[in-house]
Image (cartoon, rainbow, N blue to C red; front, side, top):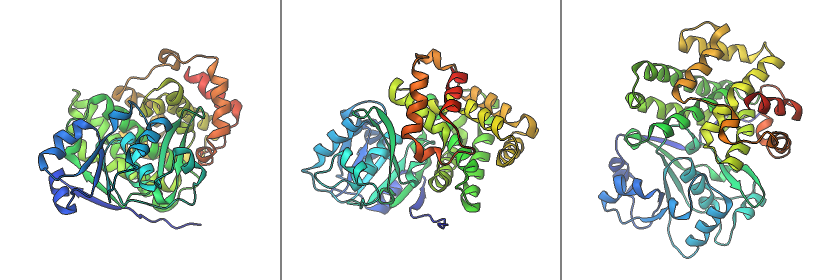
Length: 373
């Protein structure tokens, strides 16, 4: 039995300027971010940092080709710390850069998982409220050359510091808030149900879930796309707590089934999770209606002021108010793809499937896809 530990220092600031002053960032630091983020928060401080703007290398979630191009760009640069300021894509790229030796490619790093070492100290400043990646050792890369989206996980990829700055969420568009907060909710649920959790990890999973649900409910009742910003600090903390929960207990079938949707159809990660969440949970409930899933229903019921018997249905309804869902067919998914996805999930996502509330066969995973279709 391994013990629960938090190896990343977690800091909180009101503004990026306060963090920059305390961290004494300067010309020996490499800031990896989007150009808009740099111009809004970092450029006015005149710190002299080196920069790498992620959009120069492609759009969307990170691919092996994108990351290899970045690694090539950095081979001749000299810098000490990496400071990642951004959402999941920026953070995932930064974790890879932090452990890459000068001649490494993405494929090399997958081959060396378990024996990687940190080459550059890593500081992460999240600008969304979803990934929790600032406190986990996982980077998810779409390995286009291999035809699969999969995690690269190694203890060396943990950040040295995670910096929570609420005002970094000020300009977050509603759609990104919605998909990222859904991602955090799924993290909390999957780590809560995981048989590989422990009493401490479940504290983080539980508190993250309670906070997200209560703030969703208040935001929806208030109405207006900016209503959630009243609770931005709570969503940011909940995302971090969910990261601590799944960093120990793992994510499971929802994420495993979502990955092909992102890899093949480029559906945003949080939205892919939403499309699979209800049908995975219904399969869990069908196979094992009594067990830890009843504890989950109790937490949801308390958070939403509903009965445990109706808790999951109330959660699905609330999530649909945060971001309206739709059948897979409406996203262009072909029905002929579903058996291929089910087979690939079993073949390539065992890292996640081992954390399921109940184990699922290829046939049951196909049934989940068909129900979501």
